[in-house]
Amino acid sequence: MQLNENDRTALYDVWMSQKAKMQITQMEMTKRLGVSQMEFSQLLRGSAPLTMSFVSKFCQQLHVEPYNVLPTLKRQYAGGDVVVHLQSRISVDGEIQNIHVEGNQVIIDYTHQAK
Image (cartoon, rainbow, N blue to C red; front, side):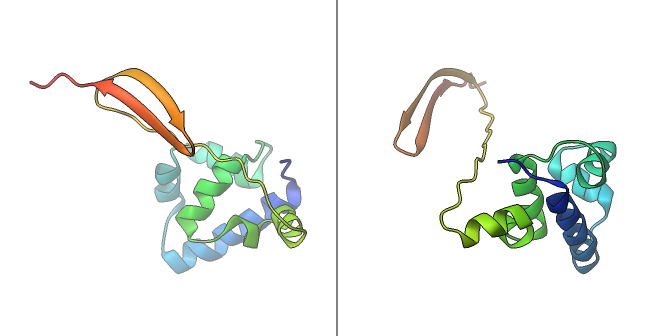
């Protein structure tokens, strides 16, 4: 899905509104999102490409739904089903031995050295 400058403007507007309501600073938000302040600024006001992964994390932190905020998603949502590509990452305390998928579940077999 290609997000555009209207989406970027909408995200910036939501940020300005929600940060005051939630009393959150830009520094705190960048820590929550795992990005630098420069990256954050480039995503909301600059030329860095917006990804659905960033938008999802950002909206989750601000307690808003992306399809209620982004014009591109609003249009698609009004037109029917919306397909959103998301990504999850996890870390395990050990060495991964095997990974397999069952339906919508990912099973990770790993070993852990107990001391």
